[in-house]
Image (cartoon, rainbow, N blue to C red; front, side, top):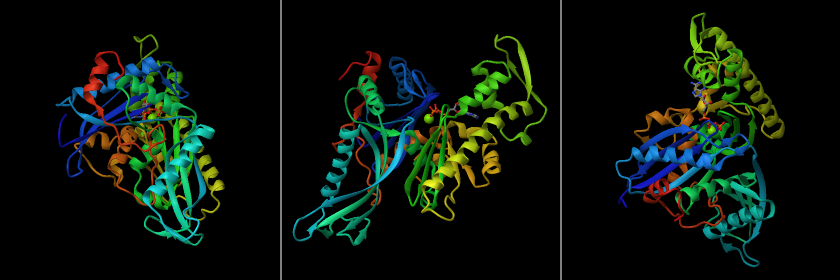
Length: 435
Ligand SMILES: Nc1ncnc2c1ncn2[C@@H]1O[C@H](COP(=O)(O)OP(=O)(O)OP(=O)(O)O)[C@@H](O)[C@H]1O
Ligand SMILES: [Mg+2]
C-alpha cells in the first residue's frame, strides 16, 4: 500500500460511453488527476441495464486503461459511481422530533444524524424509495427559532425542513452488485449523474439565485433546477444526441457511426456558421463516397436542437407553475448545458435565440469547485462533468445547510471501506472473483 496519499476512482456510466478518472489527494488536501479515459458502453440503454455481462466487460476495459496509466498499481482507493435513470424526483418534507419531554436538552450531532438515517431507512423499507442525497433547508427549534445548525443548542422539540433527491426501484442495487462482482465487497458511493454533473459545473451564485442545468447525453437530457442553493425541480427529456445522429443517418442515408462522425467533426447548429462547402462521407455500403454541404448538415442538426430547446422551454413552464412562490427573476442564472452533447457547436447560440435567456456550456472548470491539478483535458470537457462531480463528496467539508445522508446502500453510516487496486487487478485477470 502506498503511504501518504489517498486515491479516488470515479466512473460515470452512460449509454454511449463510460467515463473514468483516478485522482489522488496529498496531505494538504490538494487533488491531482492521475489517470483518465473513456470506453464505448455496452449492455446499457435508456431503460437500464440489459446485458450485465457486456457492461462488466466494458467496465473492466475502462479500469484496465486507467490502471495502465498509473505508475504504481498497489494503491487503495475510494470508489464513486454515477449513472442515469428515468425516475429521479426531488421532494420536500417537514419532520418533527421530540428531543426531551421535560426541560429543553442540548442537541447533539448524533441526534441529527440518527434522525436523518431513520427517515432514509423508513422510506426505503416502506416504499422502496432510495434517497440519493438530502439537504436541510432549515431547522426550527420549539416552533420559534430558525437556525442553520442546531448542534449545541437547547430545545425540547426540533422541526426539520428536508429536501431529498430520490428514486424508486432497484437500479442502485443492481449497480452495486455489478461492482461487487468485479471488485469485491466494499462501499461504492453511487450517485445520480445529473446531480454530480450539475454540482460539478454550476457556481454557488447560480445555485443561490436560480439556474437550470441540462445534462445533454446520448439518450436523454436530464434537468435539475436550483434555487437558494437547493435542488427544486428534476425532470428528464427523452431526447439526446442519439436522436440527432439518427436524423443525420436517415437524411444522408448512411450508418449511425458515420453520422456520428460527421456530427462530431462538422456539426454546427448555427446555420449562419455553415456555408456551401461540402464534406465527404461513406454510404451504407461503407465504400461509396458521398458528400453533403455543411449547410444541409447544419439544417438537420438545427431542427432537432430547436425541438430540444422547445422542450426545455416547456420544462421551464412546468417549473414556474409548480413553484408559484418563486416570483420575479425566477432563474437569473439561465440554462447551463453540460454532458457530451454540450460540445455541439452553435448550441448556446440556438439556445439564446430560442429561449431568450442566458445559456452557457458548463464544465468543471467553469465552477469554483476545488481545483484538480493536471486535469485540463477533463476539467474543460463537459462529457466528464459527472465523473468529476462524483468526487466533490470526497473533498466536501461539513457544509452546515447541506447535510448529505450516507450513500451506503444499507443506509447506515459506516467507516468507509477502501478498495484495494490489488483486488481490482486480481478480479480483472481472474474473472471477477469475489473477495
Ligand atoms: N462535438 C460534438 N458534437 C456533437 N455531439 C457530440 C460531440 N462530442 C460528443 N458528442 C456526443 O455526446 C454523446 C456522449 O455524451 P455523454 O458521454 O455525456 O453521453 P452518455 O453519458 O454516454 O449518455 P447518457 O447519459 O444519455 O446515457 C455522444 O452521443 C456523442 O456523439
Ligand atoms: Mg450521461
